[in-house]
Length: 455
Ligand code: GUN
Ligand code: FE
Image: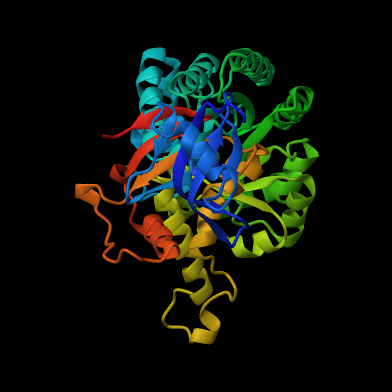
């Protein structure tokens, strides 16, 4: 029988499809030396007892205690790592003012590597403690600090996909915070890609460089064209903001006479490994283009409540075959927790479906068929994120990575209302989705390595 590096025994929840959650009751998860789930064994399978007999009591055998459950680690598809420094502040003004008054000044401070190290170490540790095992990060325009963020992910054991941000349009960006010119923006991006690819050679869980035009309004056409060419040359992931707010969406229509999606596509920026944040104002042709090119949406429900002037029709885009994951959008979204974003995704979709203006008759108030269930929001935070990034993550299934959070429902300061020994496991799953707090996340594992524990 194969020699496994770890065997875990317990009950797990994992998405079977966007709408269905699979409950793996008291299964064995056999993890190999590369941190991949090589085999999952159900209690009724032949080798269950044999494996138990071989491994039980050994140091590499881990049995969950009563009241503990496995969930896949979360995949956060949109985080501005430097903005952690201002999380929770300045949310009462529109996007354009927020960027210029608060966000560009704070991001400009990341030319200072000591400051960058402090904030980046905190944000990576905080996200891990909140169950986020993979994060797609915007850093800042600074090449060195962006490489530092990738190194910090590598050291702390998080799977980080990191982008040096490009802002090369001097008409639209402040002198104190932008690329010196288009040529240097592209050179710095290429050097950044090469440095992160070199770093990745020695990182078990992987780190990845991401081509990152901030959004069309901060970039020149030459810059966007050059970034599309770099993404193709190095086959990298791509990220940006797309059709986020009335202002940002309108700016692109005015400049290029088309929506963001087609403009980005013209520059070679919509690829299978592209993830576009927000996308509230995609029309059906834009959504079809996303589906055709394999471009994914990072749905950022908390941030959207502040800056996007609308609720994204996420159920409609899913139906059209677009890949979708979930993003915290720190600090447009204040919370580092994808549990909070799962809750907001469900609540926002319900408000879109029912409508929000009580002065209107019920039949005119909302958009039918807009709601998503908590199962679907969980899918977005896990398997949907994995598919969006084209990585084998976000599911507890064979050939996926052992990226896991151990949820403990019995922690004294955050005890779950569980009073019936025979409570349905799907009800327990729902309670976890709505009630879990960081205290309940007892352990976090990435690629078979324990990266966080709370005793
Ligand atoms: N559009 C351009 N930059 C940003 C940003 O930092 N946050 C959000 N939410 N939207 C943006
Ligand atoms: Fe953002």
